[in-house]
Image (cartoon, rainbow, N blue to C red; front, side, top):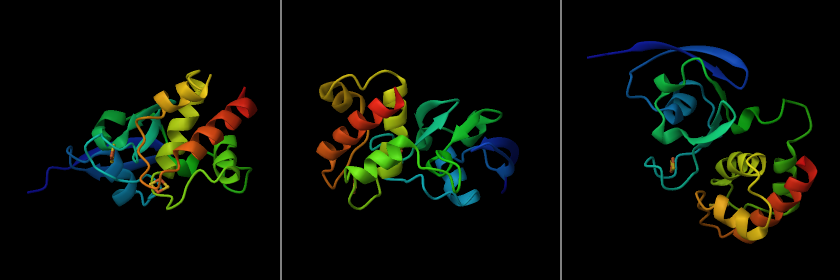
Amino acid sequence: MSNQTTINLEINGQAHTLAVEPRVTLLDALRDHLELTGTKKGCDQGQCGACTVHVDGERVLSCLTLAVQVEGRAVTTIEGLSDPGAELHPVQSAFLEHDAFQCGYCTPGQIMSAVSCIREGHAGSDDEIREYMSGNLCRCGAYPHIVEAVREAAKVMS
Ligand code: FES
Ligand code: FES
């Protein structure tokens, strides 16, 4: 039996109206209903960080956020971090430059987290970057390069 509710979401500056069941997570709304597949599902229980997006400018795990909870709030995904055709965001450029990914699956979450980590003022040292990026797992072991990329992007963004 369908129990759908209509929600209005603002994703990457665009308004979307969706009819979804209240149990649908923001992660699944993005991936399955809006075809924004940049946000990844590594665990679906808040343990890997692959699903990290921004809600009202703050990093959140979209697998633990219901789509209905973000009604009327501004959501940014990896696809909206830089405008189409525009220059990459400094964190995206730094990840490329410093080879901060291999398979790329954790990367959207890493990048969204890194942008927040820098904005929060938690990129003051390599140790601090490691600590405040520790919610994002990388099975390819790109951590040393991720730290380098965040350190360099923080300089550009300051
Ligand atoms: S998919 Fe959300 S934390 Fe792993
Ligand atoms: S680049 Fe493969 S999991 Fe991080």
